Amino acid sequence: QGTSCEMSGEEGKKVRSSEPKRKGRLYAKAIFTGYRRALRNQREHTALLKVEGSFNPDDAVFYQGKKCCYMYKAKNKTKCPGRDKWTRVRCIWGKVTRTHGNSGSVRAKFSSNLPAKAMGRRIRIMLYPSNI
Image (cartoon, rainbow, N blue to C red; front, side):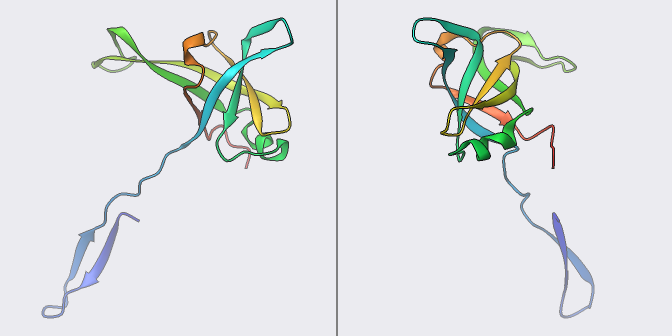
């Protein structure tokens, strides 16, 4: 995939030309729109996510069971697990539990509740575990 062989005209040798690596993301983009709520009460343990490209409940069913993460930058650097690098980037992991409404939104539960300042921010919905 990454390399191809070509014949050079004079000597008949195969010369490898390296093509640029394929670019692409392995996650779907979503926006954290708010918490699950009723008229007067809100349940912070369940987040509502609007998935880009999902417009009805049938589209949203694909994302059930997928892992999702909210990435943010903190004040202090911490060590990454399994690496020597120190970084400010942190992540809250969660899982899409079910669909929500008729417009392609989904519900997700995170390991710790998402902060309110995350509303309107990007959530990554990973395309694993796969059901296909």
